[in-house]
Image 1 (spheres, protein in one colour):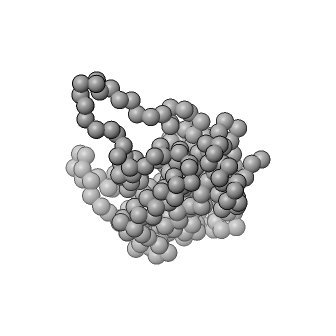
Image 2: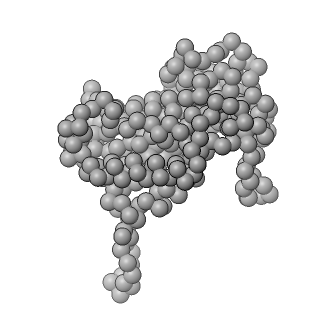
Image 3: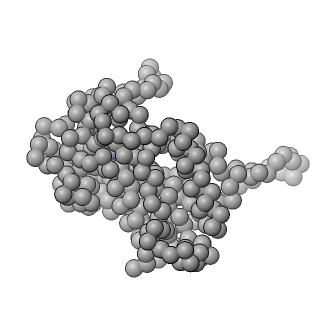
Length: 270
Ligand SMILES: [Zn+2]
């Protein structure tokens, strides 16, 4: 099996991968509290695992290489529970921008920014909006929780989706880091139900809220139903979804230009 970890490859091997048109996965995540039973690296560890599995699955169609995870992200809302290391929006944007520029300068032209933390989603899309018109690479942003969607939900008994430190993430960490999951009291950790729309005001408006607004212990969801066999199914479903995304030529297709010659205007890229 080919090596997919950027950090374990040698420079000349990465030059070859660029020449072969490899896809680069740049995972972005966080170090943040995940309740009393999971380590703060949960999003980083799961993002790495899903990216590496997806890369190995896609490799026979296209070579794929995974950079180290950008381990700090936008987690101000988790700060009150401790253990959380955050970047400002401005710094986060600059870190991702500089890494994308580095990858692009080496000749890679298809870059998948693969996110595993909800707080990064809006910023990630803004970063793409800002970078795409000025980079030679095609940039695609994904969050495995969204891309895999129903493929994840079908395995969950108590939650509609992945949520935070609940049934899904606890199950997946039981596979990835079994020695770091404290399963001594999972039945007591479930968050109160019915507050899933806590970031909404009115019918369709937004307001910021800290995580302490919806949970007493940092958990959002129910880890009591977690187990390793469920975690393995979730990890595989997430990796399958990302591999499909990577292998679909439409993912990397250039935008259509439906302007007639008489319209004029400017190119998409500067
Ligand atoms: Zn998480």
